[in-house]
Image (cartoon, rainbow, N blue to C red; front, side, top):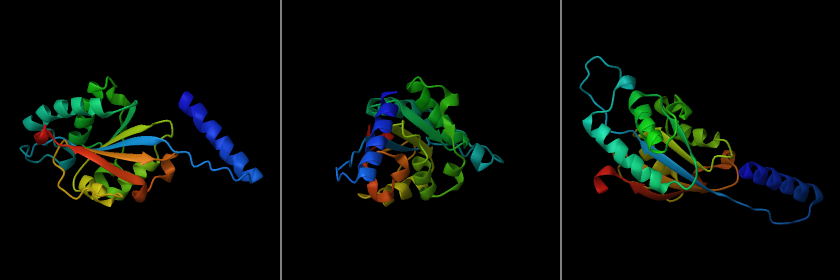
Length: 193
């Protein structure tokens, strides 16, 4: 509720400043955490199974809880989880949710994270509720790599399965987020732990 009250108060201050032309600098920002997580390693051993339905393999099932524990140590606030509904992505998101003691049904599923390109990842972030200060998207390559390469200080390397890419947005409203306002902070890869 404190965040909601603060946002309402800031919006009112912006309105009064603009209406009365007071000339007060109200360029107030809030640091927001963004995590783009590539799904854990999936299995190709199921002949006839659609790509959308592929499950995690043994390595994916081993890496996901380890990376979920790393993730839990990175977040500062309650985090909104948004995932592609593809089996391998939603399964990864559910492992992370369990580590955070969140319910699987609280994960927002966005089909565009499976079918779209990196721009839909950004679009998905701009639609987040302004009360959410931390967001994690669970998706797929090459979109995760393309996303990391588009920010103001790009990460241009490969992004392995179950990688956590950490970004920051210093802004008041999610719908004002753009590529040049996204700052790459760090990455966390299973093989580097």
